[in-house]
Length: 59
Image 1 (spheres, one colour):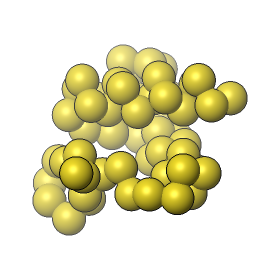
Image 2 (cartoon, rainbow, N blue to C red):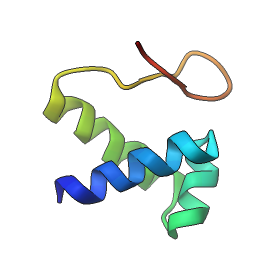
Image 3 (cartoon, rainbow, N blue to C red):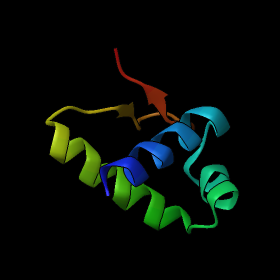
Image 4 (cartoon, rainbow, N blue to C red):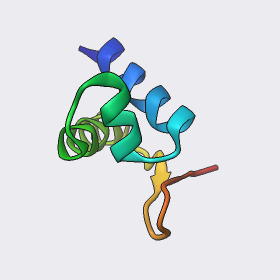
């Protein structure tokens, strides 16, 4: 399950948006967002800054 979340994370990084990543990996935007929220909770860190139009990686 962790590997799947990492693949979703990589798709968002490569595509630059949750919607485009979802299309690439055949998931809805909301499912991508939910999986990444669970990954962030699991890791205890925020991976993306979601304040702008496109998600940006955090330091």
